[in-house]
Length: 371
Image 1: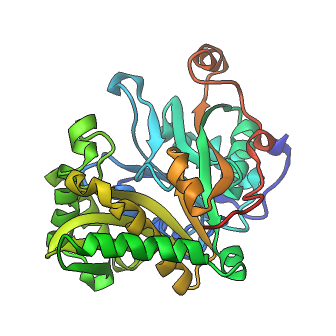
Image 2: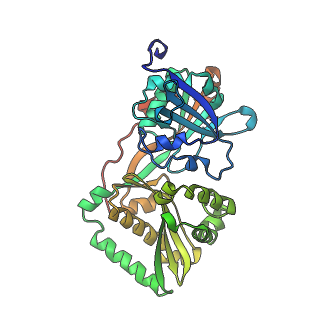
Image 3: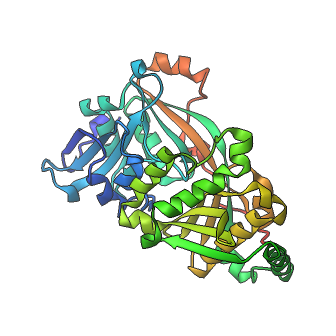
């Protein structure tokens, strides 16, 4: 048992209101290399009732000694006191741990009285099944007596950009098809492209993305479900995130305009060697011009030009992703950590079976067929 193992240094574990700057320290260096998981990302629109479990090695309140942070927000009915790891749903939700933070240390932190701040149950989802942080948290939680329940949250579709370069992407047939789409679109007006990143972000750009969503199938057929920029509240959330210059540089948009009218976009996040496709849409009256495909391929070409190694398109709607050359990459899981074993047995009937770290592992990608 982990209780019998003596840590090299004592741990200082504290529950801190909000999303403190200690988060940014680990965003710069963490086990999974997720640099976008910064305080501003977790904070979202700035109005979440955030609380962060901060774990330090040693007795001093020294930021350099921070080895784990678990930022959470309320989850479900308030009376239940449940929490969830905060942040935007995609690309993932996750905690941050230092590369040298062991499962033993993390288990000790999760057994500390301050960990009661996580509530009787807390959630991470979607979580990458093959993510080393996810694996270590599951192992540590089980050592500390938590039951970890898991249910499937889909499979992410990815494109190996390094392999695509080797194969000479795009194929001649793909280039010909894209040129044909551009020529046809040009018959409707003057076509221009805008790439937004860093200092280029402003309220006007976010409003343009919202305008496209408002005139798209998302607004017409789903009442806005799945939209990212449709409402002023949604746009304020992104604007708050973009106030962090590091996030502003990581987030980018590719916008297609016809006679200055915004008609299609992709919205992406570059994190290390990976570009995550977060959102994309096009106005319905241009639906016959394949402008969504045009924007997606332009984003892929931009990622390749930037030297990125992987394009992660997320789960769902595999048709257009396969057409772009994407293959199944890794499983996503929705994890529930339950303190009480009896409650966990009841929750398992609704949520899913108890998880083991090995249950969620899957190769990152296997096989490629790039367009």
